[in-house]
Length: 132
Image (tube, rainbow, N blue to C red; front, side, top):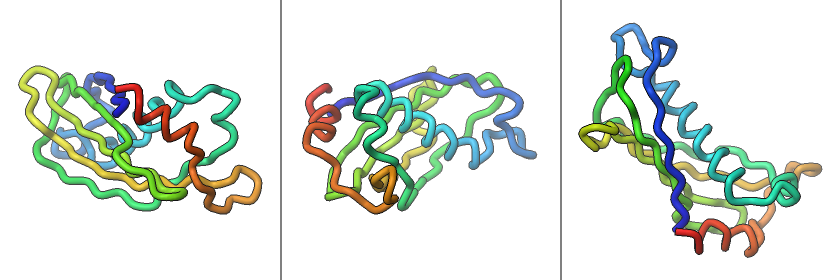
């Protein structure tokens, strides 16, 4: 499986009233890394052939992060079903490697003009399956 990883540093605007990373920010990071992984694997000429929308987010919070913590975020596509890709995202404390967040998101591929679900081409699936 092709895995994409990046590290972010928690900043003031990421925090909630308890001075922990806001749950909404974690969702934004899930969306950001998913998009970045897509863009890193798929040629520009193919990127415009599909639009991705979230069908379902399942997020489990295992710990919290605070200001200046560094969080390692990794993602990979674990399964394909017609227009659906199931993407896993893990967020860990970069120093201790403690799991902070585990997410599984179902993304649905849409045709860019009709906005109807379309099967993900085998060519695209292979880009995320054979590069690990």
